[in-house]
Amino acid sequence: MAVADASHFDGLISFLKQKRENITFHDIISLAEVAAQSLQGFFQAMDAKVYRELREIAGYIDSMRTEIGALQVNDLKNTRIPSAGEELGAIVAATETATNTIMNCAEALMGADASDPAAYKALVDEKMMIIFEACSFQDITGQRIAKVVETLQHIEQRVARFADVMRAKDLDGFINDQERARAERKEKFLLNGPQLAGEGVDQSMVDEMFP
Amino acid sequence: MAIDMSMPVLVVDDYNTMIRIIRNLLKQLGFDDVDDASDGSAALAKMREKKYGLVISDWNMEPMTGYELLKEVRADPGLNKTPFIMVTAESKTENVIAAKKAGVNNYIVKPFNAQTLKTKIEAVFAE
Image 1 (cartoon, each protein chain N blue to C red):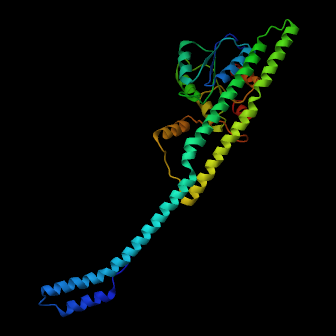
Image 2 (image 1 turned 180 degrees about the horizontal axis):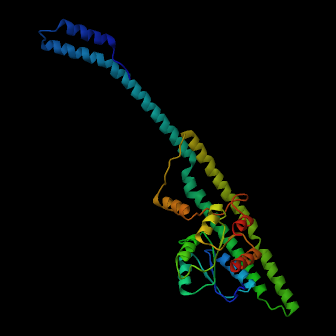
Image 3 (image 1 turned 90 degrees about the vertical axis):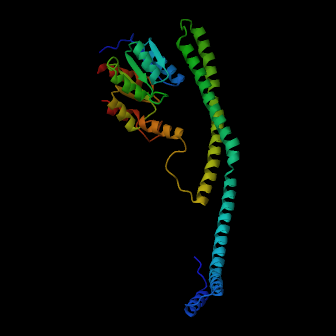
């Protein structure tokens, strides 16, 4: 905090010492002038400090605006994330179609009459070709997954940079009630989902728990 | 104890493909009377309509999970003796312990094969 000029206060003190009695209107005005002069330095110092702080805040806001721009939130929101969602939807649809095709073939073979070997072999050959064709889904889903991974990396890099520049700290809690409800349900009903290889228990470990 | 292959079996899973796989495996094992439900609440409704000899259920389903179904079944005096096998991708130790504590008869981790399903069904009816 800036301080007032000490010499002005000295003047004020000596003035009061001299004029303890018989103070006139003129004296009061003089006193006010001395007081105003004393505070002038204080306000000048304060103005400079406030100005400097406001300039720093403006600089920070400007830098934050630049960083938010670098996040490319509109591109993420309007293009990349919807596109990744569509790719994932297409992957689910492709795997479902392929699975159904393969299972249809398997069920047809399981229910087929094998009493005529030639006819049965022709049926097996036909269904096997359909199964081979259905398995081609893996190539295209692999490419789709690569695009989704690329989007996730794009988001990760920008969010990480933003968090670093802003020195962001994670807050506790949930963004909305839906998120809270999902988290509570997950915890209450132990919805952990599939584990990666090496994590969780395998069937042999489960079997030991059910002797 | 010999397994009654004519007993009705209820398969509970929210993925039609998985229901189809289990249904076909059960058919191969000799079970012909197989019904299905897409979540715990649908399964519970079916179990209150028809007496099933075995329930094979997934864990993670909406709105009622297989874990909730298991607890509901074990709390219902009319259903609590029904053999219950959990077939799930939930493979954390805490899941297996929780299911066992809730009264599951056996537990199969996805992905599984026909032999595992056969072995577990036999184990349940050997108890």
